[in-house]
Image (tube, rainbow, N blue to C red; front, top):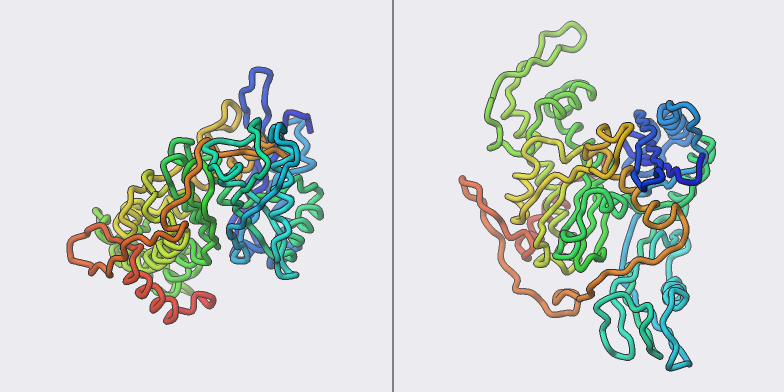
Length: 443
């Protein structure tokens, strides 16, 4: 594998994807190969069967190596799952020489200080991301490197995960014959491929709806502010269809992908759909609105949890750029409209468009947001080398500093759609009732 080649591996619940990208002499990024295989050993973002996961990785890598001379030896690998957690912590260092200019080494000291935070024995740190800096009591509105100061403080966004979950990913990749260059949080990776710097500046939430989990990342001032992994995603919708209609899983998936709508009111052509019968039985006939009536409640449940997570982040009133949807679930017809209806903010589908030549057109699809983002992450960070990124501006939200925003009551749904305020207490109570009454672990 040449020095200017970078490989990413997205090991998801429904698919495994390997992407090979090379930078030419002019700095253009060419897609040399892309391989996708059905994921057989993952459950809700974590390894459930090592042998099946290894086989899926090998199949995806073999397809990605189809171009002569391409041999994958290592990859940047995504990580997600219900075990992922994040929190904010503060770091402080002192500098004895008042004329000393702050360097990357000083920032590394701040990061090392953040690593001293107490974690349970079964967890490890995946990322520590600097957010704001205070130098001698003054908030810095850009990166602090080159400035003078004797007391440097920083707020850090810390992402942690289960040690065993990370170990199992390492084990699967290594048994497939590859080396893990770095584990990267999947929603962080996806943000590199579908979010613009302007969107991250004014405030945006990325919602990556996969098969087993939905990943959320909130940005403002070009800095990640909150991350969460939600255990409801596309597979739950498929299961609802399967159980609701009494059909096979593959039939339910086909219905969802080809005929499904996230919102009943978005169904225009309510034509009948014929489903082959099982074991010689008569075919089942349904219409698209009935299918949408099965799908919409599950998507609304997901969005209720998203609303709670965004409120918990303290940035619910800071999403000027709204929501950017990606992942396979973003392709469900009517999804942006339902997101706007439930969350009350603009929504659009994010499509990665970052490469030239080769198989570039093939990756211009929301389902490849994570694997493309992993490549972009690796390129920006020197393919695994430790570098530091800073926001150009820094500002803490009113909610995060303890200044409470006005709390609104629950909005009642009317027959005609209207935008809601999902970030008030009423919506939280609605979600909690729904969460208690539904055993999402057994769907």
